Length: 452
Image (cartoon, rainbow, N blue to C red; front, side, top):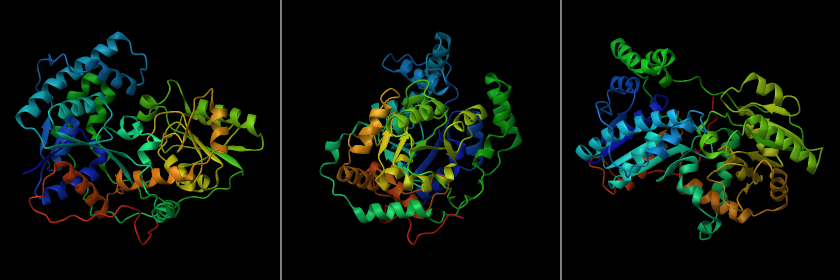
């Protein structure tokens, strides 16, 4: 019986893992969840899933080949410490050393056949990846795709850690572009189409006793962490349904800036230090003024709220639009500037030039233009004057067909779940004990269904 381990999934990803676990077990696979924090363990146990924990290690791992210092630096950067103090680095290294010992015991005594990591970029996630690969265990990473309702699948990581970021233009030389597929993807994006979700069950609330135990365990991190542990399960609750895309009047011509909060992992791990949204917008305005003062600059706000002072700075010289209006503004933009926002992939589908300042899977020379704050004007000039549609179409065809699964993490559909299961079983190189051939069709849902 093939054994699949979900490595430290977030509670917010409950619906994806719950539906995928149900499908995997129905096809004869064994599934369990690796929970790190007590609140995570209480939650996943309440959902009726087998849980593995890292608790109980009383000693640190003494394996000198483990890259604990490098992994600790990742945790420090995710915490906002780009230049951590020695004490901060020591604490992060010590936590990973205890986790490493527990992980080594787990992988030695009950090794899975494959490990699935969703949005896993912490030091612990990278430690799981390192130990699994060293032991010959298959690893699959899932991350946010270049279009809504898609997931990137990669064997090395997500975002800047993905193997896709190391590809060059020559890697797409033998790919045949599929214009019809790309036009369907663009139509699905512009129309806000969404596949009907697979049947979802509401999350079960952990017992009060288990939540209080989790709060006591989290007390070492402070009273805020302790209080959050009591209500952590609420992150799995169904959110409000998304409304229809909004369309706002926008100045034309315009350069669009896709803004990202400084707290997101892409900014902390894959971007130049201290590159805030306001600095990016201000630098873009200056660069555009040097090219043509009549061109407007429009900032697309992230889903996460930004600090009020930052918004006041934005409003001083640029138009701001909510994320819901991204489809409308990207459709008419002259070019897009971003650090490494995934929605730049939608801009590429439009044929809109993209300038990026951080590591991104679309950072292939000829597909997008890399720049820094100091060279942003030159980057925009290059992007506006050079056009390589053939390479861009080959890139998008390969990446959206073979390196993505068309499945929404927050509301997985049947076709998308089949795509994930097909990828996992191909990785396992084993036939499902109880299930026939699984069918998956990459691409947007058809007929198109508006999101409501």
